[in-house]
Structure formats: structure tokens, C-alpha cells
Length: 394
Image 1 (cartoon, rainbow, N blue to C red):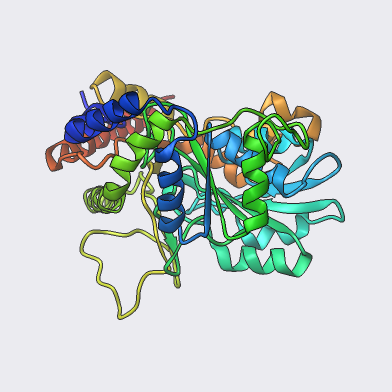
Image 2 (cartoon, one colour):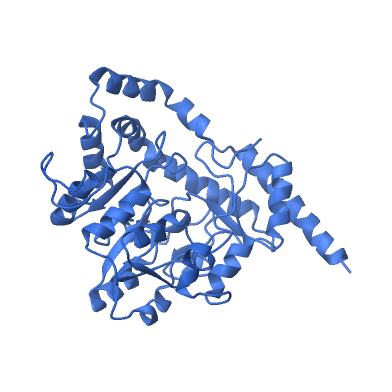
């Protein structure tokens, strides 16, 4: 069995440190907004090259509270991607704003900046780019459009912590970056957790107030907030893991590039592309840098390929004990929850096509060369089998 993500190996490699951290929290018995939360907020903000970090209960809450702190609400529109998890638009809807969907690039899966400006109206207040699968978005044109139209930018960095664009971390470009510490994330805890990072002291103070019932002083409440405090136990675990994150991200890159090498002669499979100065390209382990750093560094939260007969291939892999997943089978603009927005089939064709063809394969730092080889061998056989079946059909 090869899992999509092996959390057991991740824990085993740091068991002594993690167990000690949990025991320390129990011994100190400061479970809510204790010293580990404060230290993690500082360290993660520094990692993201931001001035402030505010720990919250989940990545969804990070998005929600960042939007609220920016006073985005009823009547406002937020431009975002339809090809992501529903948490992105949940946060927009919770504050009373309306998501406006813009189609994505067919090779990077991220928001296509060339299509954004046409979606801006007098009601547009923000852009919410999602750094999907661990690849940062093309932030320069996004930020230029935002500046030109006076829009806020809230980055969804749930899948891309440690990814960089022109040497800067994802999450450090907009008004706020929103992180998730869900267990399967590149930096994952033992439950839900999240954080807002920002350069803006006033925004940080407002998020901090909103996360604890809307008050700056205990028992005195300025507005309705919510209970969304990062758990002290999760913070202690994440503090153990954070120093390893860059190493883990590099191991993910190496494994992704090895997949690309082994799949190079399989024309039925389109591997993930990374954005470069020359456009999206497939990165392999033997790539040579040409005297300057890459446009971006992806961190491969997922390794997602495109292929026909995706469902049949997925089932074949599962039968052979190889974990895989479809992120995401139905774009957000076609979900029932957003039916009232009036988008119909073929309204955003790129993401709709991707949703029919995308398949995520096992990727995690401990994935071995032997396991990668077995995944690729099984994938080749599955693709060949489905192609033969399709050609034999009357």
C-alpha cells in the first residue's frame, strides 16, 4: 500500500520531539493562547517574511477573519478561482460578500491574471488568489491589477507554505496571507489550525480581536467576533515541525521532478507545470539554473497530472493499493451552494476540463524511489489498459 500522504511516517520521524512538546504543554497547563502560540506566531510570520502572525482555529477561519478585518461584507464582490476547495468561497459568503469567478491557467491551475480585469465592477473590493497544489500564483500582474483598481488582496496559502515567487514567500504580497495547518498540509498539526500573516499592524490587531469574541480587553466586546484561537497543543507540535519545513519542501520538489522524469515518455499524461519567465514548463531533476533564481519555487502539496479516462485510472490505482485523489471533481461555480450566482456549464471551460482530467498521485517527503517507480509503473499500465479499452469500443 502506498498512501497519498503518509502521516504515520511523518510522526514517527519526530516522535520523541513531538511527544516531549505535548507533555510540556500538559505540564504547564496553559492550553489557550499560551507561550507556544505566541512563539509560533512570531516564527511563522518571520518564515513568511511578514511582521505579524495571528493563530486561529483553521485555515477557513483565517480567510474569514482576514476578509472581516478588511471590512469586506454585504454588497461587496471578491474575485477568486473556481478551481479550489470550498473553504475559499465559504469565507467570502460568511462575511456576506459575493464570489466572482475567473477561469484558471490550463497548465498551472492558478488564477489567470489576463482574465481578471474584465471581471472587475464598482462592487469589487478584493482579489483572493489561491496558490493551488503548492505553486504560487503569478503575483506581479495580480498585484498590479489590485493597485490600479484600489483592491485588497488576500492570499490563500493553505497549500503553499514555503513556496516563493521571485524570492518572496507566498502570503507576503497581499494585505494578508491565510495559512492552514490541517494535518495533511506541508506543515500540518494533529488537528485543525490556521494563521493570518500580514505586514499591517492595524489589520493584525483587528484579526486578533475578532478571533477572541471581538474584544481587546477580556469581558469588554467592541463587536461580534468568534472563538477562533489556535490551540496551544497544536502550536507546540507545529513549533517542532517548522524548522524541518524547508527540508521537507525540497524533498517534495525532488520527488515531483523524479515523477516528471519517469513520465516524460508517456504522452497520454500531462505532468504539472511550473511557471517560469518563459511560461509554464515541466521541471525535472536534471534541470540547470541559468544564472538566476527561478521565477517561483513550488512546494508540491499535491502532484497532480492530467489524463483522459481519469476515473478508470484512479480506480485501477486504488485496486493496486496506490492512494490517489481528485482535487477537485466539481468546480465551485457549478456547486449547488453557488447555483444562485448563475454560472452554468461551459461558463468557465478551462477549470471544467481540468476537473474532468486531474488526478493527484502520492507525494510526501518520505516517498521512496522504489515507491515512485511502482506508482509510475502501475500508472503506465492503467493508462495503457484504459486506452486499449477505449480503442476497442465499437
